[in-house]
Structures are given as C-alpha cells and as structure tokens.
Amino acid sequence: MLADLSPVIAATAQWLTRAFPAAGGALASALCEVQARQAVTVAAWLRYPTAMDAALLGMAGPGGSGRLDWITGADAALGDDVDAHAWRSWVDEVVASWAASLLTDPELAARAVAALADGSHSTGAPAEFRRLVAPDDGDRNAAALLRHPDLLAPVAGLHQDQLLDRLNPGRTLIA
Image (cartoon, rainbow, N blue to C red; front, side, top):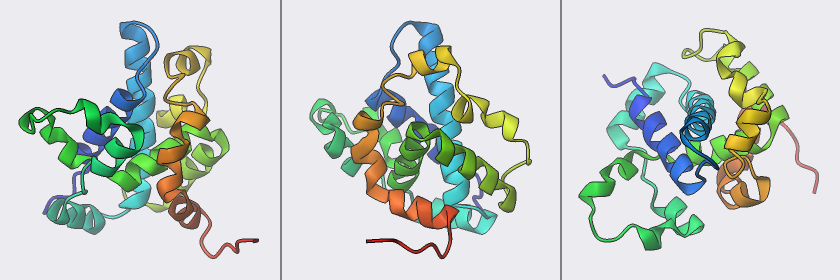
C-alpha cells in the first residue's frame, strides 16, 4: 500500500519553485525551495490526513500540472518533450493551491500547521515549519515571487475555499 506522499510533495514543490523562482543565487534558491516544500508538506498532510487517503492518491494519481501550467502561462514553455517533464504528472493541483494560500497568508499558515496535530503525519512539532509560519527577512527576500499574493492569487484561488472548509469545518459564509 502506497502511503508515502513524498513524490507528490517533491513534484508540487518543484512546480511552485519553477513557476515562482527565487530571486538571487544558490542560497536564495535553497531558501525558496525549503519554503515551498514546507508549504506543500503542510498542504499535502491536510489534504491527505491518513495513510488510507495517501494510498488512494497513490492509486488514483494526483492529476498533474496541466491546469496550473495553463493558468501561470508555463504551458507555452514546456515544448513537446513529454519525458523531460514526466515529474509534472505527480503535481497535485489542490495541494499546490493550498500551499500557495499558505505562502501568502502567515495567519492561515499558522492555523494550518496547528491543524496538523489532528492528522497521522505530524510529529506535533510546529518548529519544523518555521520558514513557512515565521519567515525572516532572508526567507522573504529569497522567495519574493513565491510569497507574492498578487502573483499567487490565480493558483491560490483555485481551491482556497476547500482549505478554509478543512480548517474551519461548519463555517458559515456571509454573502
């Protein structure tokens, strides 16, 4: 039974860092990647909270990056070499959307990390997501594009309501 979310986490984090790359050199790239990976990990653990959920994802597949690529305009740059981009089939659109929401809203990120205590993935140590919930100036500078609310809005908006429902079950919407 496949209960490992690491292929989805790795592919979705890679998609985010390619779509919204770091500003700067190797250190900035590493800091940007860590933030993307932390956001995607929290999102994936919230989306697939049990081993059974993760196993079902492994059987059904995450869906790929097609719609995300189209929304961000990355589809034009992909070319025809499908094998070079096979990792994109492991990108989960909902997880990417939730991660984008977390990256652009520190309060939402903190609530999401706190909600992990209910799932079976977490060790209960919120410090492991420090760069997501409490980024310092270096983190923010490295991931300026990755954390820019206007740039991430089209991706975050895709499934943000589902994330809010997950974090606030039974909430009522005021129209």
